[in-house]
Image (cartoon, rainbow, N blue to C red; front, side, top):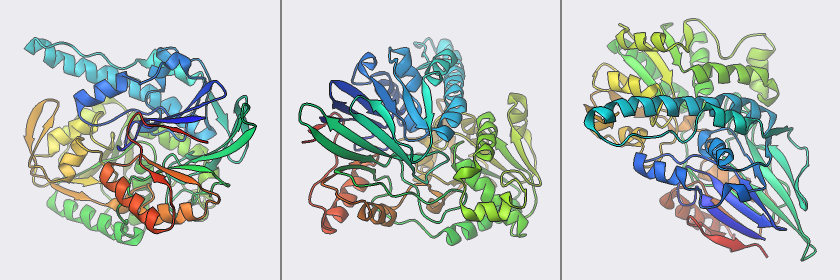
Length: 466
């Protein structure tokens, strides 16, 4: 049995890990790489394997850096099943179609500019027909239900506590030629304990080999209480300035969490009731999916909202915007407001237009509430760059820019270490979904904690699991 690390190896996005066993090829995740535009285009168009040769895909969760290349995989010949949880399947129905639509529209927008300059035109990775074709190959499976992936390979999903429907994956592999059984664990993206809305991560059964994300393997998050206090202060300060608070947020997970926290803050009288816009057709649809899967919610959310028949994602002056013309009207909105829009790393979608129109306004604020991969616009803003490029044009950053790491749905160093300590039987650990600095620092922590065999594979590295 061989394990090849294709994507999210010594980098955060583009999750793809390939298991070769019993003459079959099983892909763990098929995510989109996000970073520099030229580098992203190249990495996303070149899989490093032939999609026709893949027999099955196991999808840990719906985030685009884990699911976003499934339509291209199918477009290029993959015909097998895509296994995921029920909630992930429902989320991907909207997310992959939205991803295709955004790519089509962004290509159209960029090509208008390129045509004027006489530059070569760009093509979207895939279109809505490709996305729908991929969705037809999805199979939803409940948590804690073992299912057959291929002959000799079974799997089971456990709640990862990262986003709605996210799963840590337990694989049971029987190698026929060796008469040998091996257990493999894959965290996908691991969530945190005691955060709003979702249940805490469930611990995997015994694993021989353990693939874990290490996005925040080099640091500790602030406390949730401190994060709420920071959010309240930033909201109130922006309100006093009379500006707009722009919050880039992934449509799945982060948007719902921010809305939930704002709901509680309004309810408690900590912030004034003023307009809050969730400007994303996808976010509105995703929020409906959240409401349809209360089985994923934690006890606190049930007690405060569900048992009282209240909507945690709808209140007061909160408005979800899907119409393009309504979105454009926000450019001319006068007075303080909050605009939550995707994408979370500021690489595509409506958030680019809101940043373009507000980043030069000293009264406005940009609040980063999620991980920003290297070379993304979000990372550049987070790092304090004074001039940024948006749609090929330069803009001076005059708005205040803040980051609240505690809103991250990723486990931090302490969470990751606590989780792995509760998984029994581990012989070897592979660190994925983390940049080099984060990963190698976490590797040192694991070695100091007594784990003797820890690898942080580079893209293309292959290991014999013997």
